[in-house]
Image (cartoon, rainbow, N blue to C red; front, top):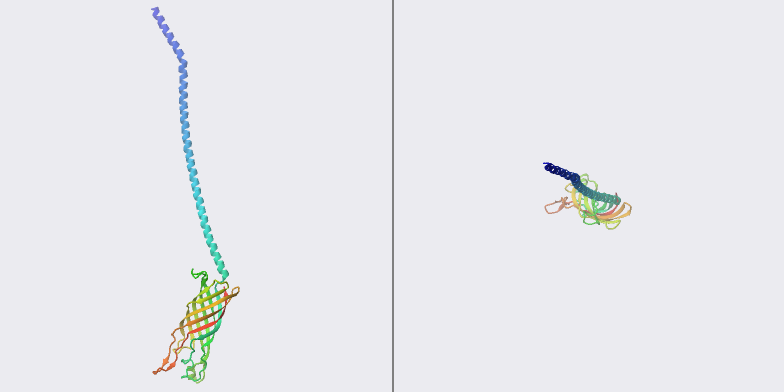
Length: 307
């Protein structure tokens, strides 16, 4: 019995000794496990922070790229706008330069003309002009005389609408008074028995295009290819009419003598057709009253002032 108690006490002592020996090992293993867990947690947090920093860096990079693209686009738009403004300014400057050049050139002109005038046929044997059947007091049957007039040239195009830089197109408005001398008013003379003097005259109003050659400085030849004329004659025709239209053709040249002062010479032909061809004949064909031929031409000089 005593032997058994001794054996049990020994066992208890042995167990206590082993436990005491293992206690430090157990106490050292617990801190090691805790430290390993903390390190793993720290590494995970560092990984998360690194991922967040990478995401933030990517976001910043995207924002910078977007800002650079927007800045480049704004710069391109600003450059395009500046180019458009420069182009518009160039057009404005060109227009101002052309306007200044046009104002300096003073291509419009007012002119005053005069010279020699003639009809194709003298007026005679009409109702009111030198009719031997009505009066014997006839005199004067000249077809030549003189004229005075004035006109205005207005520049329409410096290059005739792109045809030539040396060919300008003007619009011409002009009038003149032509005097062909004195004749006997046959009808009045036949009534009163006395000689009645009358002036053979014509007033004409013209509107026409005028082509001017401008390739020579200070010297401009020109032509009027066609133009409308309205003519008033005195005395009236045998049909007692005074008005008829016509077609006017002309040519001339002008020379710049000082600043805006020009001198020129011209020739014009005025074809009036047969609107006044009223005549009276007997049954045997004898002419009692002639028709009135108003075709006429002029040659003279003029002085022009540019403005």
